[in-house]
Each structure stands twice: as structure tokens, then as C-alpha cells.
Length: 229
Length: 101
Picture 1 (cartoon, chains in turn green, red):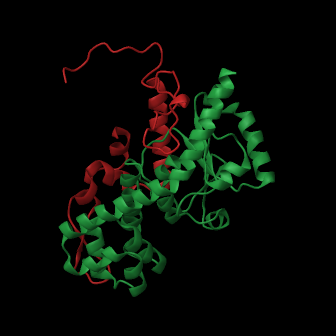
Picture 2: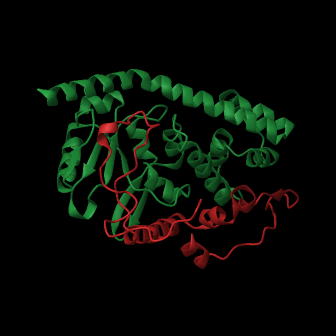
Picture 3: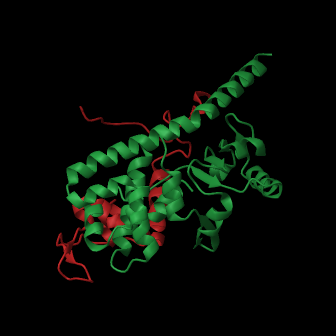
């Protein structure tokens, strides 16, 4: 669901870590544990690898020690802010086959949601993910694709082009107020509104993480005092 | 990037007419993201995956590490998890000449 998926969808060229969105069922976690054991992966930070932390929205961080993957980071998550539950993610996934191996990738609209975080580096990625989808499909788009672009495009020129070709559904105007400004066809106004929109999502992400960060702090302190004893 | 430009030559910067009305001229990827990213955008997802694999080979040849850089903006950031390994190259690699800037 992370950088590797972004490479596939066109927003990145390269990514070193592997991010996994998983279903936190007992059976699935047992399977994951076995795979991580094969990779000689160790948990490198708080929280510990327990289902209760995954279900709360934490990520578990591993570093692999297998000779063929030494140092590789694997982050595992099961819940992300603003992202649908796993059952829906699974239903909407993209499956690819690379050299005989099947790889399941998060679907594009879900990946875009997962990338809307407080981090600077995720926003150019969100923009590129949607741009690639738009350029590749704009000549014969489905209804869902047009809807997705109206809701997620972050490129003023492309939003204007889209609005020239398609009427904005009233429901989307409520969902994304900046679409109202498309009537003006003013790039500068849209740029300003897109920046404000990004800022408000980043603030929401910070708010979401506040209690989780507090919990991580407590776990870190407990880990340090445990080591001292 | 050089690997890509060999496989997909740059396209002319002409705007193309959309299929439906033939009147409105559509924005090209080059106008938005420049030549290099536009070439990347034009690859199919599987082509991008393959090109990324080639970049991996170069990265490893130059001694790149799999360990990621600390991400201080991440809510998960924990200074205790950063690796001591050199992320810029393998042990046998050294800089012979450095630019002034």
C-alpha cells in the first residue's frame, strides 16, 4: 500500500520500504508472523506486534535481517485515517503478477486516501497518483473515474479541463467545496483553495494522531525503563 | 531516468484535441510535470514496475542500502529505530571528487 504501490500507479520511481495493509484476524496474523520469521524480521519500535495495537490504528515496524533483504523496513497497518475497512480495501484491490508471483496492491482511490497525511512528502505523491489516472483514462473514462478526479485532482489546470468537459454533480460540490470555484476558471484561486484544503486535511491527521502519539510515548518510556532495569 | 528516455522517446509538446468535441485542446502531461515525469506517466503500470526494478539494480550496484532514512514528519518516528548503517553507499565506496557547491 505504500511506495511500491505508488511506483505501480506512476507517482514514484523507487521505494525502499514495504508497507502492508492487513486484516488483523488471528489466522492472518499467524500467517504474517511466519512470513516475517522467514525474513528474520524484528520489531524495531513501539508498539509491540499485537493485534490490539493494530486495531487501534498503530503501525508495527519491522526490520529484516535475512541476507537477501538485510535492513529492509516493513510497516504493517490495519486501519488508517479516512480509509475504508479492510474488507472494502480487499474487494477493490489491484492484483498484479510479477515473475510468476501474485502481488495484491491497494486500489488507487484507497491509496490516495491513505496518502493524505500530515507529511510533506505524501502530497506531491497524491497529486501525481491522480494525474496519472487522469492522463491515462481521460479520453474514455467511466463515471467512477470522473467522480474520483473531481474529488481528488490537485492540479488546477486539470480540474479546469475536467469541468469544461463534465458537469460537476451537485453531491460532489457538497463533498468538495472548492469545486464551486471551477466556475471562475481561475488557476490562482484554485491553487489557493487547494493549499487550504491540504492544510485542513493535514491538521485533521495531526488531530487523529495526537492520542495515538501519546500512547506511543508511554510505550517508549516503558521500554526505556525496562531496559534500564 | 536515462533508462526510461531510451525506451520512450519524448513526444512533441502539441496539445491534442479531445475525442468528444474535437474543439477543446487537452493539456499534455509535459505542460504539467515536464518531460521526464511525462515519460514516466506514459508507461504502463507493469512497465513502470520493470523500470523501477532496473533502478534497484543500479541502486544496489552503487551500494545503496535497504534501510530507509529517518522520517521525522511521520507520527511513527522514533529516533531509536534509525540504523547505524551508511545509507549512501557500500563500505568500499568513497568520494574521489566533490563539487564546490
